[in-house]
Image 1 (cartoon, rainbow, N blue to C red):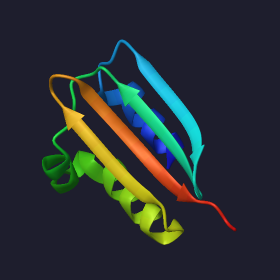
Image 2: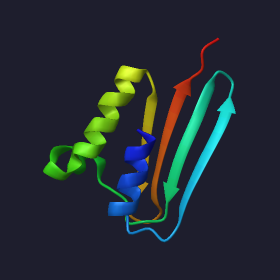
Image 3: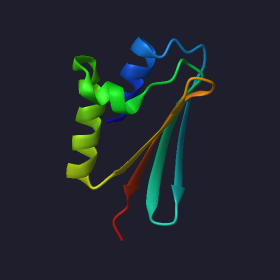
Image 4: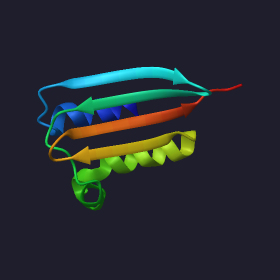
Length: 88
């Protein structure tokens, strides 16, 4: 999923800056990728032929029991966060 996120950011965002974060909080590992690109309309992207990347990420996250959060704006770019549960 992270590979798909990074690939999409580089290919489609038009961003000048890309930031990745990796933290452990409570019982989860949080991976974030942020950019300052043009943003995406997630509803439209999922409908279009070019939205397979978003659909694939969503399907993979459900299978792996990972929470996938997408926050995007044309003003500030996109932040995609993966909340990955850690085994106890």
